[in-house]
Image (cartoon, rainbow, N blue to C red; front, top):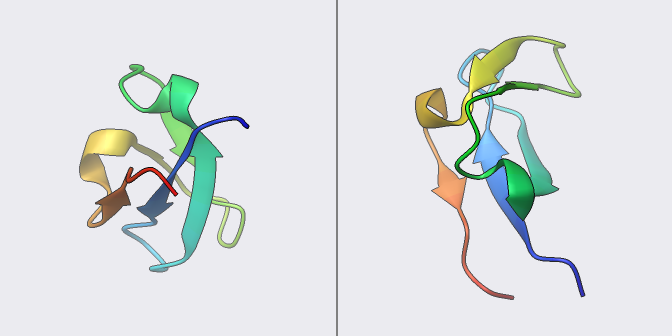
Amino acid sequence: MERIFYVRCPSCQGRFCCSYELRFATVELVCPFCKGSFPVTESPEIDDRWR
């Protein structure tokens, strides 16, 4: 099972999951709801618990 983590978009507050490979990467995530982009560190919520 692939490990994932959840983030919340700082613009629209949409919550979505990402591959854990991106958790500490220096890339910008693209929100699937509003299409805004942001680095992981700007997410107001990061949930990376094991499920």
